[in-house]
Image (cartoon, rainbow, N blue to C red; front, side, top):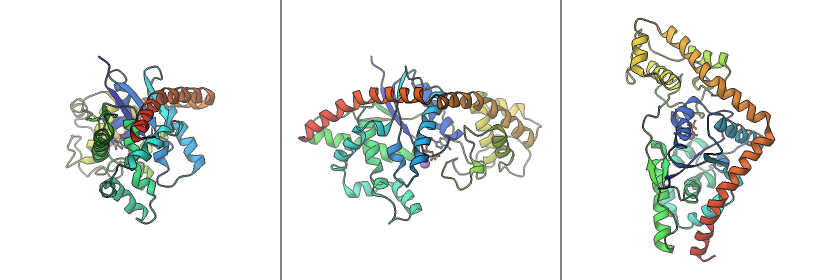
Length: 330
Ligand code: ADP
Ligand code: NA
């Protein structure tokens, strides 16, 4: 039987992915190449919903793609493309927006959260309709499954509702995608505020380890990580979130278990743990950084890979759009 198809996207809104993005999402993208028919997108259309700089966006899109190839996405085994290079996303989003209720869209909690931050009146209509574009991203590829974290559940529910509604109203067109719950994904927290998730929208860069940070910089961040006044290196996410987070990152980048690490650090201090963590993180990111740089040093080759990805994506997306347009009466 054919492998289940999966679609996932990531925004190019920073100069580098952080270890939370990698350990919580992108690492799993690499693994899914073995088990699924995978479509991955650098979603630059989504990246302009909250204001942006054109030069930075173009650069961040390329760096994002280079990092994704560098961590192991293989153009032979997955389809990696830049969203704006596949115009069908915007085209299908319009159709879907016309079967989405205004009240229904208004209930999306992520918009409420983000628009509060931007000032409700100043937030864009694009930010409001973002979940509809996301539905188009998924439905164009007839994805069977979408890897989702807790924050994306409501958007996937909307996607499922829109697929079902379209199919009922106009005839069976879209696969209704199921959530793919990823087991064993690490939830990484901010080094400066270990109860909050590590996020590029954090107020201070000191709490975020970037994949492309140079060793001295990430070592400094790790050294300055907020812990607690205790001494014991044990895994207690509630009582000792800072130490638990350092152990989680350590385990994830080395493949060792938390229990193994706790046993190995018995009787040692926080300083030892931080020093060693800085080293293993450096070891871990070095080859990723080298490969990323190699892709960036050969822009023609990177463009070629992305053009091939877009072409593969369009083959599927255009067939779905043609069918949807036909159903609608275009
Ligand atoms: P950010 O919060 O930095 O803006 P995004 O929302 O763009 O990150 O998330 C991109 C992907 O990375 C998502 O799949 C998300 O679940 C994952 N991710 C982001 N931050 C973390 C984290 N701290 N721990 C684990 N996974 C994360
Ligand atoms: Na985010």
